[in-house]
Length: 64
Image (cartoon, rainbow, N blue to C red; front, side, top):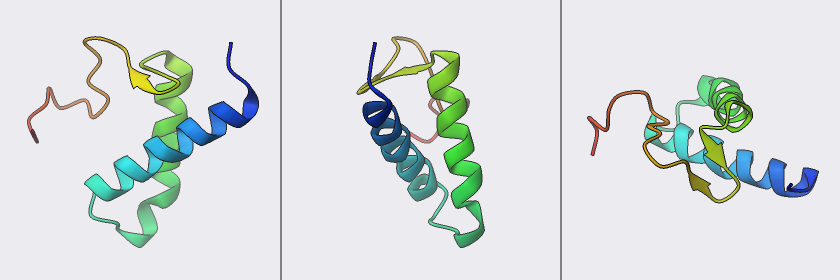
């Protein structure tokens, strides 16, 4: 189990990744934070890494 601090740090990093992927649009910060929380709480992401086979962007990797 991870600490609350580790949880927040992980969510913060993931939210930043999502926000950067969306082009750093000013009004999208909260939506990206919420998505990162959702991913973390659903188990798609664990502290430090994605679960194998999880596509957090939900697009099948189309942007890679």
